[in-house]
Image (tube, rainbow, N blue to C red; front, side):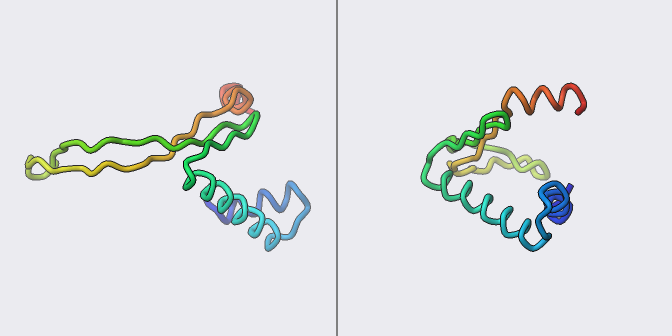
Length: 93
């Protein structure tokens, strides 16, 4: 599913227009992004939680040449599925 298909699913499920659904999705993504940029954790009960983790610098290898390269430290976003979401996926709902 891509963003356009998600917007259509939101519109169908909520009886909103596609334009309103697109604005709602964009606002949701923006709110999640702002929360994570601050380093805070976002938890949606039944769905899951988003958090930020630090990945330290390390040495990697270029797969084509085998030459060592330095990979810089960075922050990464982690998502852990909630029990309800995980249960629905495993039951095939």
